[in-house]
Image (cartoon, rainbow, N blue to C red):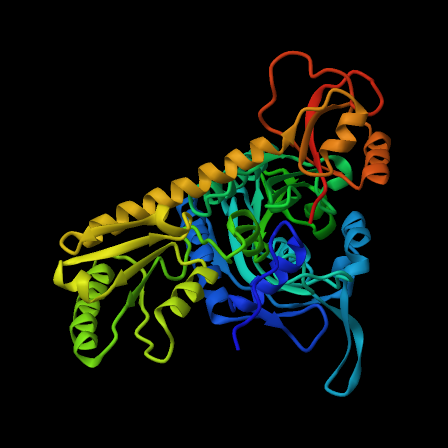
Length: 480
């Protein structure tokens, strides 16, 4: 019996997302509430994300290391705002080996504290700086409301941790990594993001400044897709991370941290997907191309499969991630729907007539139906496919940017603002007062997503809530 259709995005965006993650075999629910099993297809997508980020990190001088999952509870308590921010989310180990532990251990919610402990041992002189380390790991935060990829008790991510001799160097690092995330999101994931600074209320616990990239999802809500924190000297003072400067004076280091997690998989799903399933950006898709041979009898099968294997080898040799679907127990229509659900950017249809004409049919996932189909010669197929994948990548970015612009308002008063945040982003003057920000959140459920780095010249205007003069404009939206 055929599976029922996905709910449409307009009917129930949340259920569309939930079912799509399961049906496309990206992830499954784990036996522990709030945890997820990442399935091979989902992990392949995450691997492509990690590869794209890792190469960027290494190009900027960062190196990878590994730190323990278990952290002494006392470490978390050394930095006051950090413990206050994370205490409700901590998972604590009290027993080990059948005995009660002398000191409880925390499953890392993030690694600033254990990093601080190590850096305090490793750093002695200004010659030891900067330290530029990145971790690929999982962390645990005891979330009450969870959703696959977007918010789970345990999730995978990278977390960068750096130590510097000066505030200026730490600031430059914080902004550099925000730029790296922006470049990755736009050029690899085809997701337009807004880089900006968080308000004091939305800062990471223990940071002097937090910057983020904010993305609009297909339902108009915001998703914080990556963050970069300037930690100042807060953790350096808590953990005694000090160095001798050139004059022989003992100084505290300046530290940063930055991270992007598997919630970015959720962003890709919600930004690009449609009612038929996933649409994956070619640069990150596990399979960029699926080759579907079509035949009715053994004679046709032999000729078609021979051509299919040859073309698959040519595409693979050209660096294209190609999957040959030679299943003979399902119909071509089933295969087409199956790979559409999984979001493969380009489908190659190859039947007996195509073999006879030395041609193939290319079908774009981002353009359903006849509009996205074209017949191309088999000769030079790798070049044609590579070009088409580039067009799809750009098309997805252009479409997402157009949708964000369509759903971003610049309301003139609070009534217009309240209406705008029901379905998208609102870019408005904001006075900078935390009380004003809290009132907006309480009344509309919209949060200040970021204060964009790019601000228009001249006066920002008057705060949309209180009418006081505003120094900057900020994005507000409902968020995941």
